[in-house]
Image (cartoon, rainbow, N blue to C red; front, side, top):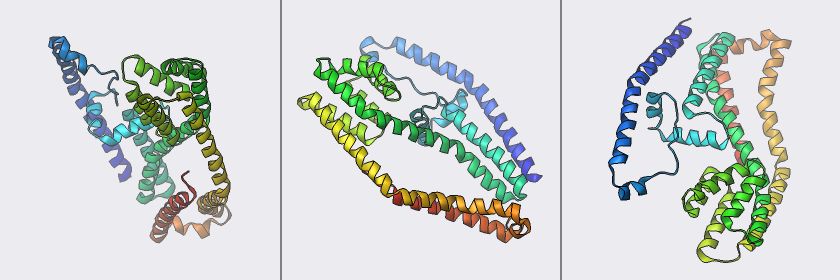
Length: 321
């Protein structure tokens, strides 16, 4: 009961603090915006022009106080980039609140099911990382789809350049003709250079948004061609060939590591499956694992070793090509 009271007090105090800080910081934020606008108007034209930004600041939360607090952390900026790379339309502040709610809900469920504070803390830890695991999964899935469509994109770009179109015009053609998610990234690349950003910087932004090896190859090849000259269509054809050969090697690697991936899946699924089966077949045999303090320690140790084993096997079967 004390666990629920502590959680309730924590949630109420946190919400009250954020509400008070948001009301206090609302006027402060409005005054700061007004002061910045007046300073921009009062500047001479030759001084104000170089400071105009092409990209707006990303709002991490609609609550001004919470947004100001989140901007102080570099990890939150990395989290916001991860959400954007996974094509998740959610701000980092809202995502962290979702993680907190998930942690609280799973902690309550684990505490009720296990009847011990250790289960509550384990449930809170798992609940906090479940939304992040989903975001990471969506990011990986989107990047995999991007890699699948990228050779076709390079071929389209090479054909457009060979047909006599300018490089920037070819980017617009890709944004209109190629499927997502490649179209969205190249559309942003085209719009950035269209509104005045140098092509080199726009390409570097593309490599930052999509940190894949193939994209880095593409950006490096295009920047070198623009600086030193050469046949861009031929360079893109060779790059497309190299990327397709990498895919062939990756598929062969997946075949050779299939046994390791199957072993990882079996080792991760076997302990919880056995525990659930024993709860139905012979509850008295497995019950001390949840009621005895030694059983709680064994559960924590088992989960820790399972997690370590997962990362070790994953490190072994992930071969860079």
